[in-house]
Length: 203
Image 1 (cartoon, rainbow, N blue to C red):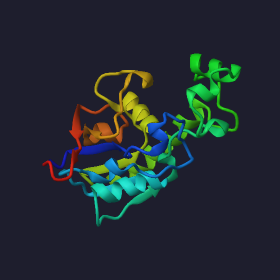
Image 2: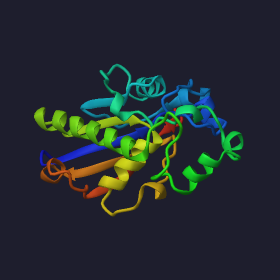
Image 3: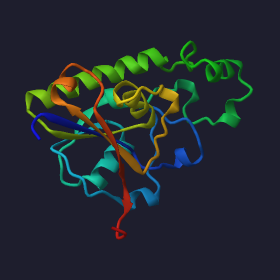
């Protein structure tokens, strides 16, 4: 229907750093072998992606032979000096403990504050919105990161749930279905549906 807009959100595949439960923001990490075997039947008119290689690689697996519009705005939060560190590495650090208890007020050293992160993602969303509306795109996919998807769901899912309440697994996406005018006005979508990814060869 030409009066709706579908925006699908996908998290990149599992990486080695994800497996060790390390903070992975602007640093990068190769996809694990199981993430190279995922597939999806859904197709879209336009594909946007974080410019980090784990997202580009995942997008090329799920949506081969399609142009990607790369946006640094879709990167994960920058964890600064905590990149690559785990909870065990950081648990005795007082600033880390303060950040865990109040991530809005505190910031990783040389990293991004929550406010800076959400402002950046919001600017990226506005760029995507402009592209969708100017080209009359009815369906697009975003290949991005867990934190970005949590923020977008907290802003645009039909019912409000805060950033921390969303679960964003690696091998499942979400489609947000908007009335076009609501999308233009930056309002919430009317329907949220899960999009499962499957292992190649298993349907």
